[in-house]
Image (cartoon, rainbow, N blue to C red):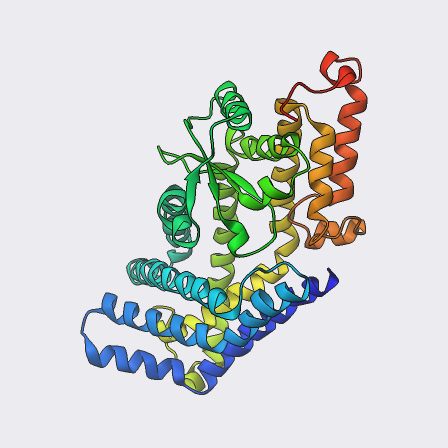
Length: 376
């Protein structure tokens, strides 16, 4: 578990080191010069640079990606893929990332050229709009690229899930199962999408590994909480605020770094695509420092969804049992400082304590006193 803490620092230092390599070798400036020789359009110059930059970064960080996402997952007994299968998913993810990264950064560079003084504010708006688009299309167009989604078989479980969804105002008329076991042993479920793309999904590991259907319903209740409490929208706004501060930090730090080292790097103003490694290094440092803030935002919404879920489905014992399964890859009882800094979900101890506290406060309720009526 603690090894994952160090990976945060290792990833950040590695990314900053790669940025330094591209700058001090003038490889970044060389990509810019090559792009400028191919077209006079500044938009296309930026797009060409960003696309090549993404490919180069993917190649340079590939050894770390293999260690973290393949070897480490196998070391903990979580992965079900051989290297070829893993690489196939990795390649698909990088292709999608290449397209998205190129479009977003090309537009942000256009914003920088249009408003060089206030680009960080307008750039935040552009990024938030793209996050909204991503959250909308992900369940329908992106997720099926990696997994096969099929309607859950009719029966008491599906009927119960849809009944709870209707009672909570979730506009879904079906429940989907996806083959996550093709990749790993992790359990998960989600209620994702909006603007007509809402989808309730649960992975086949949750179906196979849960002791009973009550655990499945308890997990879905939590996921429904995210939807009903508008956590997607709230997190988009909070992430927008974090990026607003991050972009402001970049705008402040970029001039200082290029003022000192720009001549050595052959990097000019912030409009210069060759300065992208500077921008990315500053953002990497910012998000490393902001890790406790980011995790606290996420952990707070997860705790809210826990409370919503247990109130909606009234299955505290089942949720506690599901939480114990997560202890395979999440430390169950971290120190308070560990939880604040490194945990984007409440710790297992915190969640189980919350469920037992809820149960103690509802012992006089008929269903808690006499046992649940949910499917066994």
